[in-house]
Image 1 (cartoon, one colour):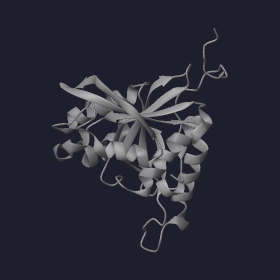
Image 2 (cartoon, helix red, strand yellow):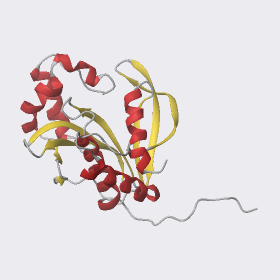
Image 3 (tube, helix red, strand yellow):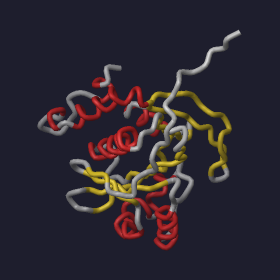
Amino acid sequence: MDRPVGPPVEIRQALPPPSTTITGPSVQLEPLDPKHIDDLYPLIGQPEHAALWTYIPKGPFTDKPSFTEAITALSESKDPFFYAIINKTTQKPIGFFSLLRIDLTNRVIEIGFIVFSPLLQRTTAATEAVYLLARTVFEDLGYRRFEWKCDNLNAPSKKAAARFGFTAEGVFRQHLIVKGRNRDTAWFSILDSEWAVVKGAFEKWLDPGNFDAEGKQVRSLVELRGV
């Protein structure tokens, strides 16, 4: 008796994350480097920024030396591979994120370890940064699946994933132990077959014509995807 199987897939490998700069209109993504530490520390590394690190495996930090040690280690990592998000006007970093769980054979990769400073949170630059990374993943590196995972208790992260066009897939219960606590992990993804629609919405949303004189969006990303 014949049994159902999945459709055939082209057998080829995806490419690893590039160690070059990825440039957009207002931000650029460049490999995280110790040179970014002095600018990042006042934005995300001081004790008053502890909440930024609640769901991140590293941090928070008690002082600059501990922050320096952590960022230096992250900058040397190949998986996750970290990018600093640079404001093109000031040429200073305002946050970072990474590509991780890099599976070249199955062409699956994840965005994670996202730390956006208050200067980046809820800005068009933040959306542009995620768009640039997604475009690189699908169009330059050849991945089939782009994942977003987060603690199921992290409501802002789940909301952001949905806004950016990631589809919720479910929750892995008791998936990890992070900082001595249980983590149920919410899974989201964008597939290569979905990228054209997601990309179109990103580009329409980022177009200056989508903002009024006060800088407010005319149409949301969700509206532009036709969801």
